[in-house]
Image 1 (cartoon, rainbow, N blue to C red):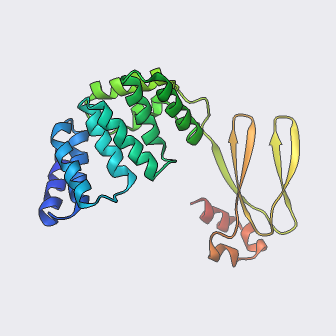
Image 2: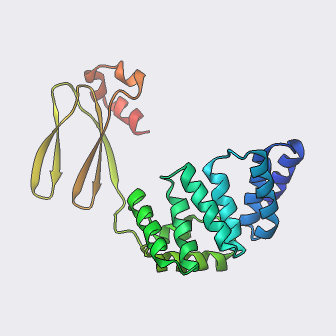
Image 3: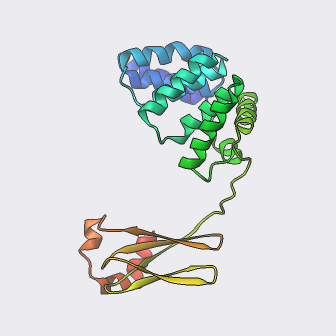
Length: 231
């Protein structure tokens, strides 16, 4: 944390009129447990770049949340969601903030949005990925998220992913339990098959990489090509 703060301060010195270094400095301070110092920096970054991205407003909201300025935090999370509606972290933290404010119905609605966007979200995942140093803040947020209805652990198993190249005029066999069906795929498409529990999910990547599209179906069968794709 100290190194992150030092590097951010150096960046601000090099570009004092730029919003991005100031934002980075504010984020480092927030995560290091110094949100009170971060808030004026977030405000300055927003003044310099009022059309900033969602992450600016989400991190500003986090500093406000950590200093118990919950109304302002909720407003900043809503701004982040307005800019990036499908970013689940903003919904998750807004759910926690609403829960802390006693606005349980709204908290549950935001929790439902989190699970719609990211069905594998869990409090366990949040705990493992958060960069916040102050564990009391982490626990407070987890408890609020739990109250909002977010699950402790994910019910979705880790996927086993494999890649197979489907030559022309072939179909991919998709097995779900005892049922078997044929999934028709376009010629020369690449299929990623992922197993989650007993279900096979087939995802198709069609004409996404021009160099792959230029190769023949026969060359796709080559084991060296499969190894290259796997890497």
